[in-house]
Length: 173
Image 1: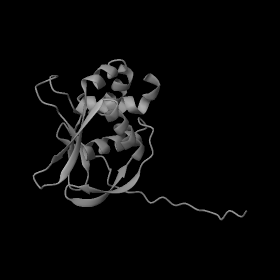
Image 2 (image 1 turned 45 degrees about the horizontal axis):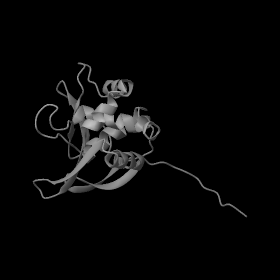
Image 3 (image 1 turned 90 degrees about the vertical axis):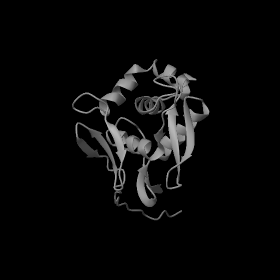
Image 4 (image 1 turned 60 degrees about the vertical axis):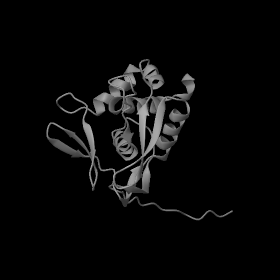
């Protein structure tokens, strides 16, 4: 089982451990993070060099409107792997506006595994800390996702698409 869980998957568990909790840890309820908030954090940690994934712009439903968001399909695939192995649980729920949203939460099994990888948890925690030492909250606005702490809103930039130029040449056989 250990060889299947690379650093990226363990760090995804670390993110989930900071923003979610299974029932019984703090109270009798599971705590989930919405997928677009989680994908925003993943994008930020890719930019910071903590996660080794590619990303690209993809059309998504963001707070009731379609926008282009920088998403790592590799991270989505790894989340699916973690769900299938029982380290993460996924739920689909409806918002007040009758939109469906996916939520993710770490499981007890995921927390137990993460206890063996404190170095990855510390690396993720340090990347998400405010100057005051606390892990920043995440808020999803109409125009971006933001880290919030100490009365500051720090934009993540997950909705800022990049224009990447490239050239190609024909291959003659």
